[in-house]
Image (cartoon, rainbow, N blue to C red; front, side):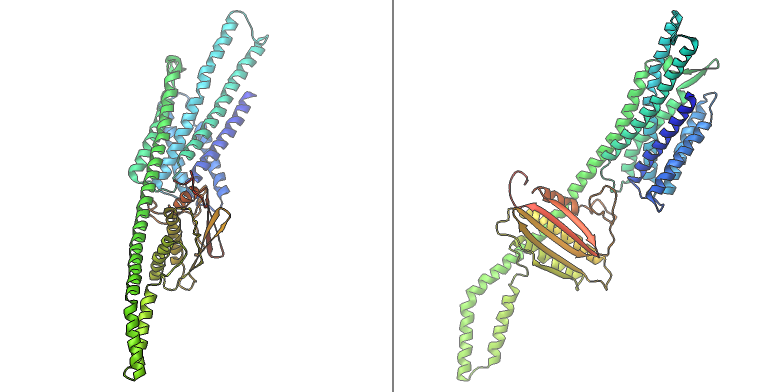
Amino acid sequence: MYSVQIEIIWGLSVILQGYLLSRLMSSFMQTKLQSRRGSRFYVVLFWFSLKLIRNLWVNDNYDYMVSMLKQVLTCILLFLFVAGVYQGRKIFQFYLTIIFMAFSEISFFLSYMIIVLGKNLFDLYTWYLNRGYLLGGSEMGFLEIMNATAFTLQMLVYIVSLLLLFFFIRAFLKKYRERDFAVQKTEMLFLLLPGMTGFLICILLRMIIVTMEKGIPVLLYDRYPLLAVVVPMILLLALLAVFFSVQILQDMVSLNREKNSRIIMDQQVRSIQIYIQEMNRAYAGVRSMRHDMKNQLSVMYELLHRIRQGDGEEQELEAHLKTLEKTADSLEPEFRTGNVVVDAILHLKCHEAKEKMPDIKLDVEQLIFPTDLKIRNHDITVILCNALDNAIEACEKLDEEKERKIRLSSFQKGKLFFLRIENSFNGQLMRKERLEFPATDKQDRGFHGIGFLNMKAAAQRYCGAVDWEAEDGMFYLTIMMKNETGEHVE
């Protein structure tokens, strides 16, 4: 009776292991199949079949070579299956395969300690039997207690092993935050070594855990009881090495991303500074023009006087007035939003967009900044520069016959200040599971794909948020911030 129940529990645990395997793989890679649910079904079916075949491969003599081959072949077949079902780099698929195998084996050997420690119960039963106490009241009752205990211990091993595997994968996914980052070969080796070490330790345990002495299988823990403490410690250290390697790499990626973000921001600030210098020169021209206005008026009076006396021509006066008009127009600022820094940003980005796309339409008539705006110009620069860069890049990808347009607007409601950017795009967005914003499609993801995160960080300094939506070939980006200073502003 218990054997059938054990087989059922084993089958259920393997099915759930297959589900956890599919969850791990789908968190990092896109499936090649049409349906995501279909891919999960095939992963579960493959894992169940693989474990069933491995269990049918009986190792009666506990040959260490057979034990090793079982693990190695399982790993190879799993890697080939993953490479066939999921898209991605082969080296990263191999890494995820090793990670799953290491987690699966470590969870098994940690849970196996239940049987190692539970053997003391059988020794206790034997001790009572040797002293004339027959548990269960009869021999049949005693055997029933022994079988029930063995069944309970085996069931606990399956349950605990499954729970440990669940928590290991969950912790791994939580620590591996930057899943969109393309890991290089050296970084991949850094990640792979701890997982490979843990997996090889488990292979070694499979090879030596049971030995034959005079035709009788002997558990390694019986010969060396201290291993009941040492082995779990080694496995936990291997597990921690896997998690720490992931944590270190993720911290390095975050630091590099922040560094790259600052580099890009410094370039934008320098561009704005150059434009501000141009604006200062324009203002200097205005002051110079005001200084020369009396002289210009004197010339015009003289020309008028000559015309009245018939000594001059009206064309000379008209040409002189047109020259003054052109000079005045050249000194007129192109944008007037109420914020000189925003005007500078719009000037730069507009000329950048016009050079790439002469037919682009930029509408900023409803972009007005209040005079009492308390949001720092630095944060406004971060938001506008990144938003306009994304909008210009989206317009560049449009076909020539499509209309390219960017519209900026703003309004204030109470203490909340809203900034909205609308732009046309080709309708294609890269969405990845558990990512808040669309992913970049550029190869150098260390320098790209950080615009939304920068805007979000700037908005959050004012208890704000960033929201986006896309429909009918238009992308809408809305940034909300509190128009106030305080502890939220860094």
